[in-house]
Amino acid sequence: MRALVLIFSASMALPCTAHADDAAVPASAANDAPATTAHASTVAQPTRAQLLAALPGKRMSYTTDSGRVVQWVNNADGSAALNKSPRPGGKHSTGLSASAHWNVSGDGKFCMTEEWPLNHGGTTQWCRAVTLDANGTPSFVPDEQ
Image 1 (cartoon, helix red, strand yellow):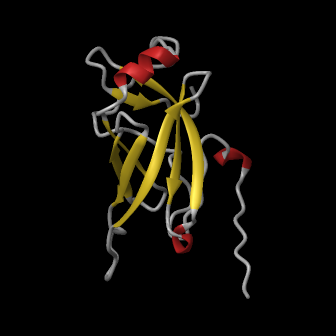
Image 2 (cartoon, helix red, strand yellow):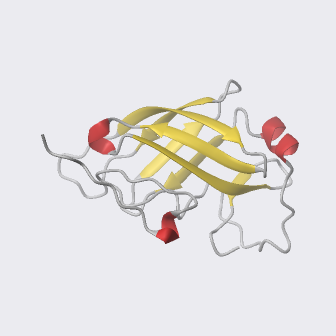
Image 3 (cartoon, one colour):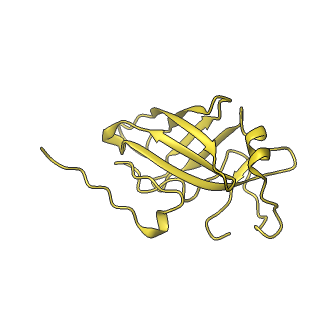
């Protein structure tokens, strides 16, 4: 029997995951709204209660290091269905789907458990800070902020 070993670097600690076809997610996490240039000092971090009220029904996404986009809608019950786009430029690449569960941690971070098939990394967990714009659209906060 062959063992699968996953190695995580310190830079991938928040959030982190390893998929067989993707090195890390969502280090460059973003939703499908236009990117914001606001800095942490100018964007107030929403409270846990504000995020729990605002996130159900919201479409969110991130782009993996390999250029694949993972999209989902946050269901009110904490579930989500992930859809990963085909590998860019792949000759026979297809998309992939997986179930997931999301929540907001006590310190107000969006957390997700992704349940990918074992040959795509298996179950992974990550948490990331999120902001809300004036319309309630969520955006992941870049690592450096």
